[in-house]
Length: 380
Image (cartoon, rainbow, N blue to C red):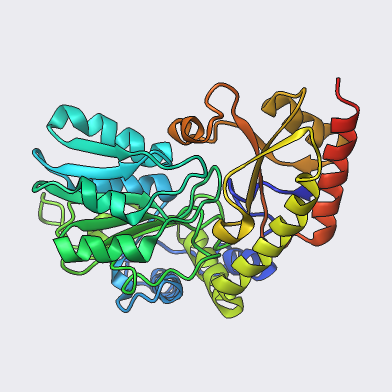
């Protein structure tokens, strides 16, 4: 099997991560922050260590500002719903995932307005478009670091400077960037950043998080048990406990901590460069095939994603054939980002996404290119 669906979740996972999770579940998996006995305390210490490992990869000084969630979607909802109030205005883009667009749409009935800025056919948005769209009541700019459809990298530094200069909060969706781009929250002027644990950070499914800058008054998304202030019926607002109500998935978080450390030792920028090389290798072959339509920018301006259509095949059909006949895993369809597909011209059809990871090889790219060539030249 050749796995090329890392944009959905990474595979395989580091063996040490699996061992760390297994050790927790077999030998000390108490409920952290809920009891004073040895197992609970050891689990709490391991979660604290994991929080520090995740914070370090994003250059976050205070690990308590990292709130663990089950995925980026929950983190984005926590940020968007936790900060916006009636009368606020939000700026976002046509390249966003539904995890941004749907919460914003639902908040319209609460008197929150939005401007969805149009990206170009390669999925790129200029920072000047953000500045031109600012209003006196603009509270938040929410933007993807890199598109999950085309991989297009956005000008985060420039946008961050604009937001900082105008006193507007800046939320980054790092779903396709964490682990393959150097994301320094301070250098980017990020007010909040949502990220997955299970994609570029190589952690287990069901993990993610939200970074929240120290001076932001975020409202908790959930209310419930925190292990603190148990006599009060009001939800505590302390970090991180007040935002992680209920029992956390400690084994998975501990696994994520190991994986984040693993990625940090290699370096996200090193991984990103390697993935760029793989995509260059693939697209150098695909661009010579007259029956292949490529979308998005060149490899140097995107993360490890190639988006394509093959003449004579529907995206879902090509995905199934690559899996059943060639043992190659990709993803066809609309990738939970309809506006992005409208932006790049695939609204009526969708496309096939190839997304590489650090465990892929040049041989994988050769095998995929050979399969597409064989299918294309023998068009139905």
